[in-house]
Image 1 (cartoon, helix red, strand yellow):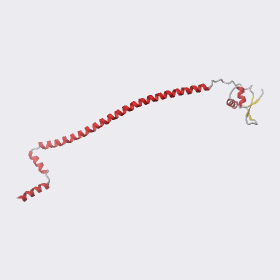
Image 2: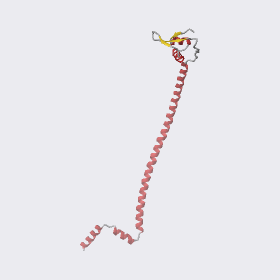
Image 3: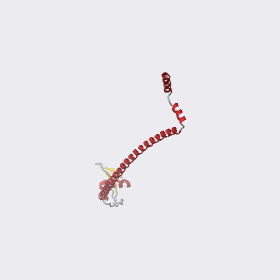
Image 4: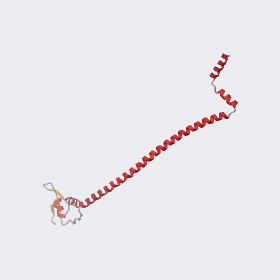
Length: 165
């Protein structure tokens, strides 16, 4: 049961762990600590009391390399998908423009037909009015003709005929 005073780096070498892992092990077990003259932390530890077996881990460099490779492959796949979507969007855009042109032509035809319809209705109403006057008896038409003459024209004509006599 010899108690030794070791730094975190020395303890890590003895237990075959990193100095950071040795530091957390000391905190977890609440081993007494003190400062040396050079400012390093010394741990009072009995190595026989510590039952620590380091876990062997695979190096993380190949795993990191695999992640980077997988991400690069995923980026390449996404870029290919993006090009495909751009081609599809281009074809949809041409369809949209073609339909816009078709709609504009149909709208122009509709407006022209509307103008023609309004003109035809006006002409039909005018002809219907003239037809209704033709269907009236000749006396009524004559009376209406005289009622539509302005009074000034009648006075002028009467005055003219009176002067000429």
